[in-house]
Length: 434
Image 1 (tube, rainbow, N blue to C red):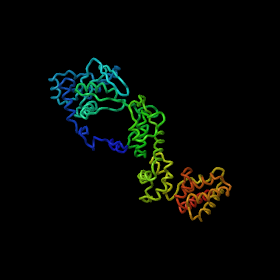
Image 2 (cartoon, helix red, strand yellow):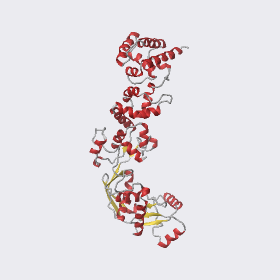
Image 3 (cartoon, rainbow, N blue to C red):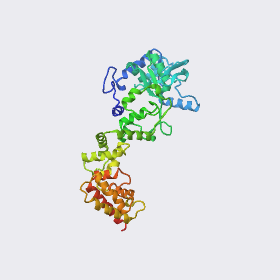
């Protein structure tokens, strides 16, 4: 899923899974031997030890620490077990974990490219697990070993990993590795300033893809969470982001994930698409979302006529189905009362639609210009405001009070479909008196 998300965003990698390179393998499960080797070396040189404490004992220990209001952490019971004691535990069938042996005194310092110099007392650091009982490494061991063996120069990750850096610094030192430069990026919070979670909406890139966000918009939006080019520029292509990004402009302040801004930005990107590109990106959503009774494949020329009217209104591709559905369905479903505009009666609405039907029937050209020539003066002829007549016709031919421009919409729907829908609207009004 992670690789699929990166590919969708257009973030192609030069080396790694599925691409290859000089520093593989690239899946943790294929690198276990490397982690085991590092863990054994740490144990043999006295920088790590085997811990045989059961999950039950650790749970009881933590509960007692909470009760005593003590900082959580392993109590180091197994730190100084003799070789004979370790052999006895293993003879009993206990599979140990491997823990790092934190120095009990002194301080550990490091520099972060965003947070600057940080100093931590070793007495506050837990003897953390390096290798779990199932043979898999923890993140602490895997990231240090992998970053060294893959010659990583810079590590950019979330601010929540900042407290783990002293552990990693000591681990790098014990293994004789040089620590890469670090930059811990600000957290992304929900609008209520709590940690971003499912209750704030989608949290997976795949979820945003399914909702019809464009990858270009997502990259632009995410890049501006905690970083900015200046105080005014908000629309940046991936090339512009790559050219201008610098850690110096990354903020320490947590970024707020604003869904409204994402929707606005996605709308900007949708409107910037070429008509054909918009059609091609929208088709999967139309095919999935339109009722099954609508014949597939959708008529390509008809779709190309519809989509420019929708493009200006859509903020997400998933909205295209709802916006365009009235172009495809056979019957419209709406409340008859919507046909009677403000300050109008049922009778005046019927008269307006009947006269409109009579005016439209003889038209040979059913294009935007011809429709305007006929319908705009009709309002005055009927003693109506243009908004009253056009609003009524909009409901009759689309089933909605809000839709794309009326004349363009009617031209795309075509004469036969429009007249049929006006007839259906009249039937609704006739029945209101029954």
